[in-house]
Length: 111
Length: 111
Image 1 (cartoon, chains in turn red, brown):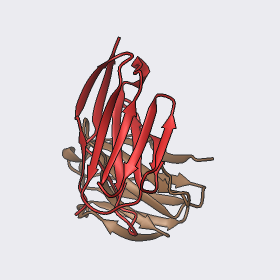
Image 2 (cartoon, rainbow over the protein chains, first blue to last red):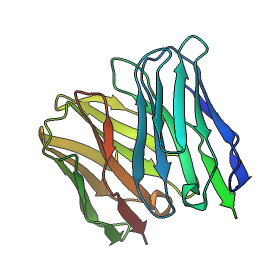
Image 3 (tube, helix red, strand yellow):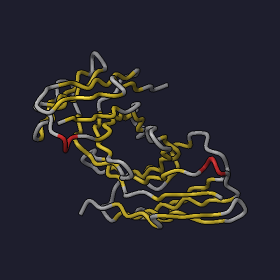
């Protein structure tokens, strides 16, 4: 059974600092997604990582995928308040298109 | 156009009512999903339709009944729900480029 774990669950950061969110999963997968969710809103797609070693960057966020270690990271550079949200990783379980979400990381960026 | 449209945005229903949630996308996507999300929790997979056929049912109670009339539409029929079924219901679709787009969600309250 596919399990997806994230850590930390809660992250309080100061503006301007860097930090990394980790996403571990339990079975082989070649598709990993990162989403952002603001309170009371739906999910916004941030990144789709489709192969081992994939790295994608958008603004202050950079995501990477290591399929051998079954690990993805979301790195935040020089955090700003606007990045405050909950971040989820989600892993596709394969041919069945079964997408399972991680536990989520609530990011609070303090001025 | 990457839009997934869900209606209604808000629904209040009694425990004896029958109602439906609707989801529509016109991107020719090959899979569509229903998720349930409770407050401060990750989205929980309910159903997956692949090429209009039900491919995954995550042991969802029969009071939830999915339907996929065609490649653009996905319904979730609701009957005899319980107050604990109150949640945000999210629809998503999977593109050929392996991006998964989410709708804005339907907020369901069972009274």
